[in-house]
Length: 94
Image (cartoon, rainbow, N blue to C red):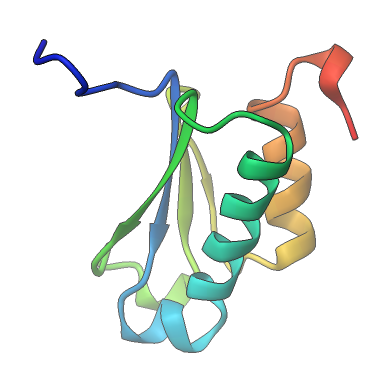
């Protein structure tokens, strides 16, 4: 591993392909980034924008790794709830 190249414990992939972006994917990603920052999880959890996942009929789509949880037709509320369930430990619930 190169010095300074940090690997997060958990990654949230947010599709920002045209349909997902149009249906709120980009904004949901921004909300999750703010939660990560506010909870002091920067470096431990990362949001990665992806291009099209070929699931346009289910937009917006996102994936929480390493739990391999996929969301479709995602709302901000659904994304926040999944974040709490799969990113935060029970004692960190907000």
